[in-house]
Amino acid sequence: MTAKIYYEDPHIGTFDATVLSCEKDKDAYALILDRTAFFPEEGGQCCDRGTIDGCEVLHVSIKNGVITHTVDTPFVPGSTVHGELDLKLRFDNEQQHSGEHILSGLAHSLYGCTNVGFRLAPDYTTLDFDRPLSAEQLLDLEKRANEVVYRDLPVKCSFPSAEELAVLDYRSKIELSGDVRIVEIPGVDICACCAPHVDSTGLIGMIKIIKHEAWKGGVRLTILCGKRALMYFGKALSTLDSLTKLCSAGPDALPEAVNALLQKSLKAEADKNKAETLLLEHLLKSGIEKLQKEPASADEDRDKAPLILFTSAMDTRNIRNAINSVASGHAGILAVFAEQDGSMNFIASSTSGGLKAITDTLRKELGAKCGGNDTMIQGTVSASKEDILRCFGA
Ligand SMILES: [Zn+2]
Image (cartoon, rainbow, N blue to C red):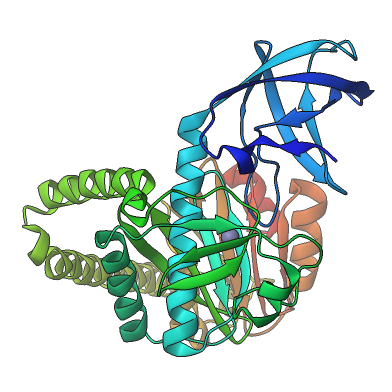
């Protein structure tokens, strides 16, 4: 088992150790030392980072008490090495993890919640409770957690004896065996935990719940503590500043200003759809009238002649609505081709059928992508107007 310096001296930044083994593992090396200050990825918390003899430590893991450092350089067994921790990252992790203990301890004592999940990622922390909490309860929880920070209570870490543990009421009791490390924030939380923590709650800084969502019958919270919370609010304020400038409204008036813009945009969209549909209806009706006025030859039936319109880009829903509203006035094919990004979206309708054969021709001769039935088809094609008219026999 690797000697864990982070328990003897939780804030040590440098240490010397002896290399026990260093074996190639895929593209890297698995380095095992007799002692280390690097906390491994364990209990939902990401590992420490830093260097060993100037080489970056890529990952740190633990198995059966043996800690493995993943490095990209081989080390000689028996040699002495010098480790240096990224203490900024360590402190960041400590702020998040200690903040999580406060929230979990309070949620347990106030609302009977059990923490059933914890993940301390490089940029966020999530914790899962086994029962739901209302928005009011979460606000209360956050307020009380921050009051624990203001009181600057000590965070005590210890390894009680089996007898002491037997009578101690602490969280995570059933999940652990062997040496159990207890982390206590007096009057707030007692929990079994293997990770490094801040020395006192004042070092955590702000505890902020930034998101809550339903999770397996309970609730998942995403939280930020300390410097992460500060950075988040800096970014959020910058976004807010941009929005207030864009909307020419103060922060408090933003929801109203954005809603007004949204309503205006929805009305403009509705007006455009109405105008497009009316225009197409007019063009189709005029085309039908013109067809019917043309003198028919002996073998032609003007009522069944195809009417094909070409337009600029239009919403396919508007094309469909316009065709449907005039379809009963013409027994032949009605089709609208609307240009869109170099190709044409189209819809064709025919109350007397015949579109299945047209679909086959469009696919075969022009590579059109289309589908539908014998009386209505929709699709896309890249072809000249002449070629399209030819496929419709127009
Ligand atoms: Zn913990």
